[in-house]
Image 1 (cartoon, helix red, strand yellow):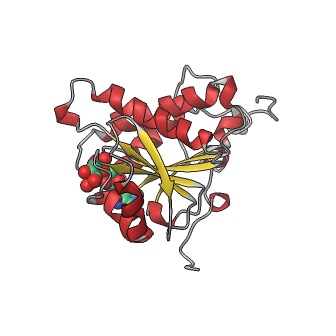
Image 2 (tube, helix red, strand yellow):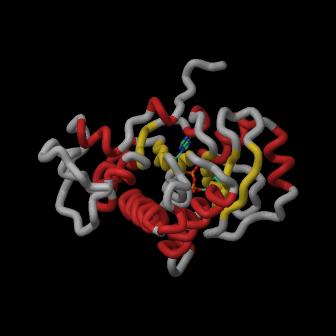
Length: 223
Ligand code: AR6
């Protein structure tokens, strides 16, 4: 097995980053949650190296592969992935479909189709739907850990800050729903380029703010 694979246990959570003073925080209207801060991570890495239950691909509506992260995932998975995708009859923008992962170190691949930023009237609604549907499909398939590529922020040219805000907000909404409690143990935003990392550093604390304990202010009793 290649030694450059990364498992969730090796990836710091947002809670870890606050405790280690590696993540700044700002004023947030959102309730801090120690539980959620133990689920969320954002990293800069190649998503094909992650040993998580499932990774989320930024596909196009044909599901027949392409460049960017889609190309990287198909190359690493091998030709069987393309054969399974070809039988799925495409995917609408904002929707998500799941396949096996073949030669990838993860168990499943969720393929979602993001908006082409300049081509849609409401690209934000489509991007929100990508995150929501991918999380739903993951839970329906008993996935415990999920890693997202930064959907639409490459050739589809969605601005990184807005995309990171949508990803963070939709994930927070999903995890806050009582029906989803305890379903996902880890949600990892896997960025490839620095501009997306900077956007997550800015947006994550707005939707996953630190608890007093994570700031070292009290012994903490928050959930
Ligand atoms: N691991 C993680 N992220 C990556 C990797 C990687 N190995 N490679 C690139 N990225 P893009 P889109 C990041 O263009 O904008 C394809 O041709 C990249 O830095 O892959 O949704 C599809 O077939 C960027 O932040 O996807 C579609 O036709 C992010 O992945 C179209 O591109 C998404 O960039 C979809 O465009």
